[in-house]
Length: 461
Image (cartoon, rainbow, N blue to C red):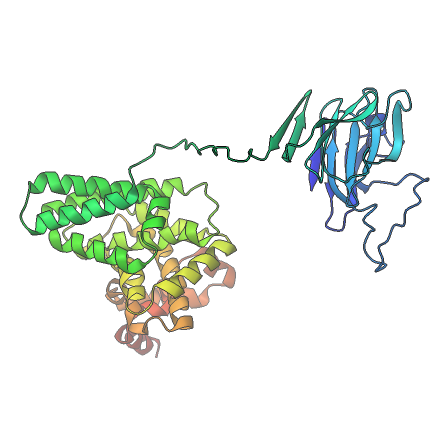
């Protein structure tokens, strides 16, 4: 635990030792001098403490002295031991140490204060000139000039807080009371399940030639964008990836070329909004990160080469950066969900193929009549796409989820063999540091077809 006051702070180790540093006004750091502690030092027990320092095992601190909570006021410190008593020091001009002001004006060393009724204190908070304590019975106690007084009893207090001259207490809800309803700062959208049902219904109308195609397509696009914009709704709807795959396939087969383009634009807006909302989210749990796997499928809108989607590669770059920036816990959660739920053909169809198609588009180039090469404007996304594909390839090898041929990239294999050989030559000459700083396509041979590899070997020989 950690506590901070006006000019000093206390931190508690896992073994129950309290370290203090900062301004030592009125000996609030538990010692007479120096006037300021510039590094954390263990708080010293007063010489009259007779309790043993060690527990029965000879290693741990005994519960009567081991600290479990701390609070720092303006010029005083309150510690709570695991046995439930208080250790206090510093200014006591308002009785903030829990000792009557007539008995003590200040303490230069830690002094012991017991629960008035023989109970156990469990936590403490401190303001400028007062202290608040919570005991194991759920009662709240406050310091006064006459000592410690109970200010709230029988309310089953759960948490306390103090700051300045104020204090606050959270208690358990009374029996039979109506619980507070959580209020969200974001705009609440309609029930996500009803959105999916509505999309399925509109697809049926399109397939059956019912209704106005333009109106239906616009509404489908709007609802699709809405779902992608809110990752939490996407997570709650498609725990089974097969359900999402079914919906996506129905959209592709039911929509005309014009409708598909409108849908692609909606996908792009929704993906950008959803990824932006994840920017400040702590992505460590399966229920928080699995939407990233679901997002991959929507890049497969490029299955139709006539569709204009993410022209400059901004969306795929943001997506891949989000994946690659996951903390270790998030990576493990995503790995677990992918290997458990994307089984059979789903792994390749929903995760590998959309990224490979996107890579093929981003890595593509044309040559004009003057033999000048023109590269796709989304080319800068190639390194991060390859990095995510490398992660999926390692997963597929580990769990036998795909064949090597499933990762061959047409665009990479079609790169001029001289260009590939130059890349290979540069990669082999580069130092480990240079390889970590620069992108070499041949450093990822899983993308190269056997024929492409054979051509490279022939050039090397």
